[in-house]
Amino acid sequence: MTTPPESSAPPAFPFAAAPDGGPPPEYAVLRRTDPVRRVQLPTGHQAWLVTRYEDVRIVLTDHRFSREVAAAGGPQFGSGAATFREGARLNQIDPPDHTRMRRIMQHALAPRRMAQWRTRITILSNEILNRWTAAGPPADLVIDYATPLATQVACAVLGIPLLDERQLRRWSRIAYAVDGDQQADLADEINRYFLAQIATKRDGRTEDALTVIATIHREGAIDDGEAANLARSVLFGGLSTTVNLITRAVLLLTRHPGQRDRIRTDPRLVSNAVEEILRYAPVNGTGLDRLAIATEDLTLSGTPISAGDIIVSPLSAANRDPARFTDSERFDITRPDAHTHLAFGHGPHTCVGAVLGRIELECMLTGLVTRLPGLRLEAGEIADNWSKGVLSRRLDTLIVTWDTC
Image 1 (cartoon, rainbow, N blue to C red):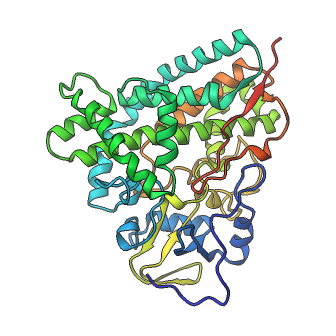
Image 2 (spheres, one colour):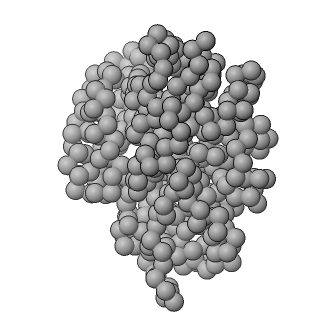
Image 3 (cartoon, one colour):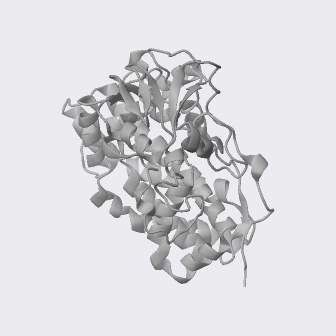
């Protein structure tokens, strides 16, 4: 990989997020002054950081950018091929392997199948809220709502027994860490678990995602490592990301009570509110889990990129670009073009769980806003409670309260 000379050392990336958990303020500055900027990653590698919507979209869709960064000698963040030795995550491989594996995931998470989960998710949400209203305020949104809801949904969609929350938290924490040794130690444990579960699905009598994976595995279209990795992707994609998204959504609504109340009085706004939350809330903020590498020389916003250069393109930077979204720093659930966000990626690497993610968020909004009037934070701002992860920032606790009469 080439590294052009720099007059000064490139800044360390990722940048610190805004105090409210929003995108780093550097993104707005760079979009105006240096939209394709050299940065240094935590691994010591250098990369180009792109911050404009159109540039991010190009990196996500253009065939001149490969996802197989680790195979080309670049860094690997999250639970990918470098540590889970047999197979990689979907957003870390190229066609034809990506096409083959994505087709399996689309079958396992088909929109028609996911739509059937709306009723089940609503029931699960209401069961939790029934306990909340019976006990009265306050409650911890992360521990007592988002985590159990996301866990139950992910396990149910996969068709596996409800996993112990502590076990899931340990798996998720290590799987998305940067420490490769920790990941390698965990890989065999997770793979053995999922392969044992796949073995129980051989009869094909159920329609869950793991049965789809097991059927294709039995036919020889995927090997053991690929089957385990697909199952792991469904679990972790539906767990950590969903918990973070639910938490950020509620945090946004408590900071914008007028818009929260509009959803309560007009439920037709829920769908568009979900899209604006996805645009505005930087769930996977740094883009380090979606690195790309240029396969030929090209330019982005007038900056020459050489073959072999690494590109990091934070989706949260694109989603706040004022060239794409008018008054982009304003949270507005009636925004007409909110659906054009890139929160789930774009093109062939769009998240295959996007439909399920939207359903979960819609059910959550409907339940919390309609059943807990005046939903708000119990103790003001929570700026000091953000975890400082490399891949994203999250809240491990969020205490909320509501009106009881």
